[in-house]
Image (cartoon, rainbow, N blue to C red; front, side, top):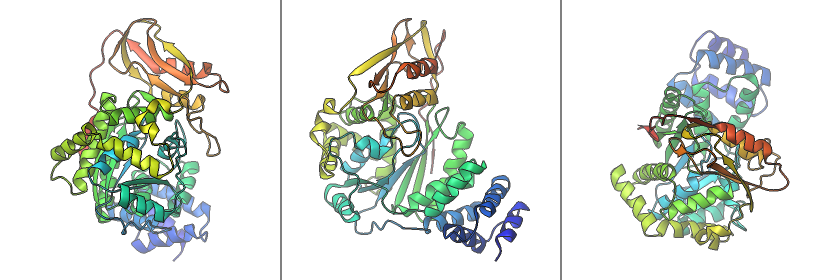
Length: 434
């Protein structure tokens, strides 16, 4: 089999066979096929596309290209969740303790953030002493004993995806639905869960800007999940403004804890409860989403979810007292307000600009080598649809002396669009793909 024949076949619009897909994925992972030939194939796929069978085969080959996490020693149906990301998305911090408190084992492997803010792992390190570098044995024991564990990505999951994504990133071939879906799902499948709930964002702060594209990606990923023998559901949610009110790291952890005590922002709470409902249902603890939602709400009201977070944090070396006293989490003491320049309604908040402002403060990474300042962040005092008077606070910026906040303040001020009329209300949950 020759790589040039595979490239030519796809260039001419033909379907690739399972054997051809396996040949190029395995050969490229081993370093036997050069970048320039795989670049040519990615461009051919970008323009010619892949059908459902080709996409599933590509995903499976990438899934099997490295380690696969064996969760068979964990009792019960393991349910994982994946978000396509956005500004203020601290969902896992509140979601996983709720689901674990309802009897669903949570065994989650997460990465660090690259971009606006830290990832789930970075945010968890806001707890003093929290350790993400635990052994697989300890990881599994914690899930069996406590019901939840989250660790850094120590296993070499889907190395073919890492190589292919790096190549796509520099050859202009990222935005193809099959390539995006297979990239996401190969890692999720290798992580060993029995069922997967996908939170696919849509809007200005999302990877997929339109509902049409978000729906197409969600459907593609659900098809892959089911084709691979997993239960899989996708929720399409709004990311046309930041999620919740907090953007940063420790400040987002505080907001997640507030949500576990029933005092979280309305939009963030609604998303957490929706995702929790479907995770609980897929985990076999409820027969429908309404019954599962009642279980999730009861876990919050009873304090079980908060206690589960504390047990999880303590088991991984963190200060569990900070769960019950989130004011002890280190948020910068220096703060400055962004004021409204005129009266009116918040028509929109340019989501990505808020994220960039947080990164300017040191709250995110522009490159993998950057260190994150977990104490900085932004608290949004006004959201889309809110009325504001001239001179009133739009947002509070928390910063440290090593970063001049002026550019971040300008960026954040420009992110708010204020007009004379209240904008139409937008649904947070756009669609559910089953």
